[in-house]
Length: 295
Image (cartoon, rainbow, N blue to C red; front, side, top):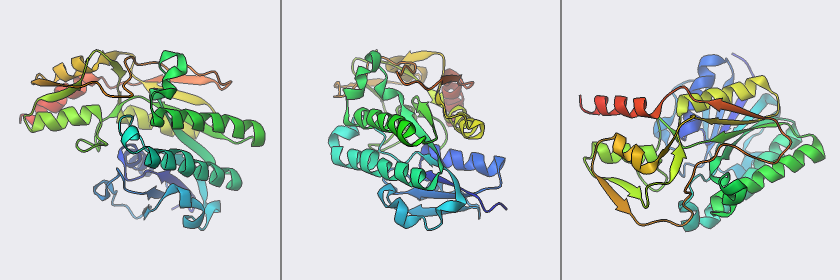
């Protein structure tokens, strides 16, 4: 067993859990998960002696990690990650995404640790103007600006990966932090109408968790200091996705911060953008889910 360690913030969450499983299969590294369990769950813990779970905040990273020299990479996925909820809990969002992330960046910079950071497609619409649609999108966009400056000022090394509506095993299916596909699955199982925010024509690109994690792992392994986007080539309206479940639909009032179009990654930074397209099709996934649910 290697003495080297990978640190995953948000390691008890959706993407973090699947990433940890990927590293356990592909490497012999030890893994540290740092999670405040605001949306992560102990139910997601992987039963493996190589994984250590720590409950704590990213802002306290310097106090929590006593031996930073053992860590070779930090996957920073432990941020506040919902658009509408960022209006309801703006202080929590900014505390996590601005103060907490700044602590992670400094930790990596001071200890010369490679950073892999999850960006969001929520700030890409309207030629980048969607970054001002919500506290969440704004905070994520500002973090990218900070990383660019850290690279110029200190030659800071990092990878950035844009996520697009990730779905699949371990996704959150109920509560305020649930995903779109997770909500639809939950309501389908409960035989309740699927809730669609009006007008329903807003489009999204959806990416299976396996495709997302594969790109995260590849970005770390390639070590090219690039920007990546991982999504599926086809976009769907939220209404059309709901109709794939062949269930009743109920419409909800329009929400503040709602995006009306998906966007492929377009940024002004000088970094080379590597576009990756998922292999798993959303229609096939939903078809399989319905089949299993009806057994």
